[in-house]
Length: 361
Image 1: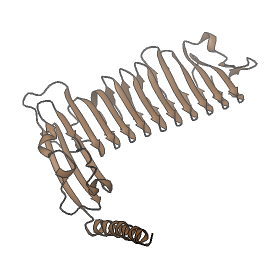
Image 2: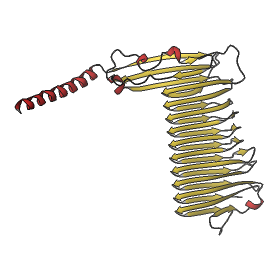
Image 3: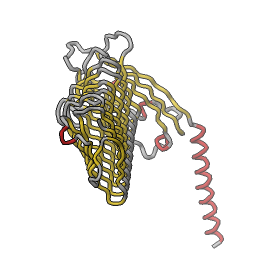
Image 4: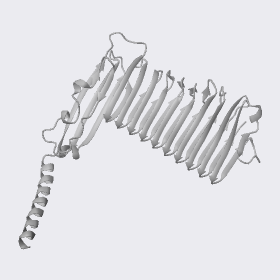
């Protein structure tokens, strides 16, 4: 028994000593490295619409536009920093494919792909990435953009008087932010999607010829439109998170659907109409757990609204001026039956209240 106990003590000492040595050596070889890479795209025969695709396994992806004339149709600046234990002697090639494989000029595709983790290499266990991919575009070129990040955010800043074709931005884990400054047009489908992360879209005087779609599984959704033109349906949905929708003087070229949905979270909406809307808008604003809150204003004799509300656990509260009362769950402007253009929404929640305040001419 005495020999057995001695053996246990020796084994334990080796394990503890080895563990301490492992940690000490890890910190002794800790560090970081940085790399920067640049790519440009200049087509031999430019197309009326330039298709660009970006696949980024990890890192923040930023789209911006040139502030001075440039011959490049796209300039891509990549900055990489990897930090962690056991980094002595490591380079970006230990974690990424060679940079010569990142840009394919023939297919106009950018691929920043990580190598599979090596389970027996402790540098993979403790690594931390700080990666940005900045894409500079030309204001006088129309692009069809497709972007996908696995882990990282996407941001797009569009200045005045820029036209885009189709735009699809997707992040598996990360937020998406898109700002259009004014007098912009999306000639194709405009879609934002993330699995885990928020979506924020702010648009001024922008023409959405094929509508708008924003979807997130876990994260908030913020959609803000001022003096915009919508020519197809507007859809915003999240599974877990709040939805904030603000519309100021929207113009519609045809009757559309405007649907907002969340499973867990509230829906808050400001809907202000001081100009003729041009068509009818119907939709469902729905949450399972949370409240639906609406502020509505119109100053137009030809415009009316109606909200039809339902809740399982919660109250329905209506207030305002120029509205019909005593209709139970139905809340309408007095001129709704004779209005040329109408907003008609179903406001639904399972657990939560519905609060609508309206002022109508």
